[in-house]
Image 1 (cartoon, rainbow, N blue to C red):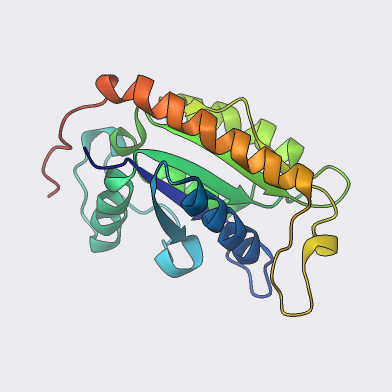
Image 2 (cartoon, rainbow, N blue to C red):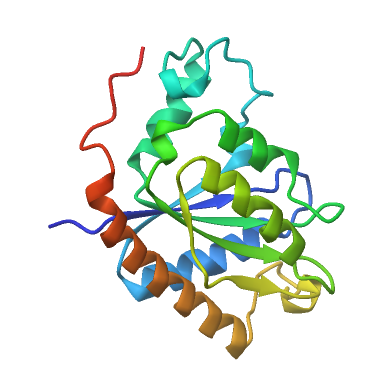
Length: 196
């Protein structure tokens, strides 16, 4: 049996973001754990416009090529790790928009959070995201990675260099995602309906 697919979603889309280097570190940790096939999904590259579908996402009656492509991407995923900043005590607009585009494709899949920021480490953004993903029938992991004062972990080449606590946090999150994915798998539809 093939390994399930973990998609690491890079939430920040702004120029000069540190999120991509944090995501690359978490990707390396996930690949080293070897429990998932790992795929990086960068919302800056996906480049979704503000939600512009005329029909409710639950119907999967998509009218735009960008929505069909996004649905196909997320349908491939079995578990997710969202790497996100904290903006004004909450999550950023791009990740909310990306979540809102779809419904069925997210259902009964686990999601973990790797947040970063200043003193709060993105904890308030994580707390705000949990009810959003729960409404999409996702299961948020209890384990999480919170990166305080993120700039201290970025070297001169822009590479994220974690400490031991962050490495342990990543390992704990990955282990929980693997457990949740195996438990939730039977609840998911065996196939995603054909996209229009």
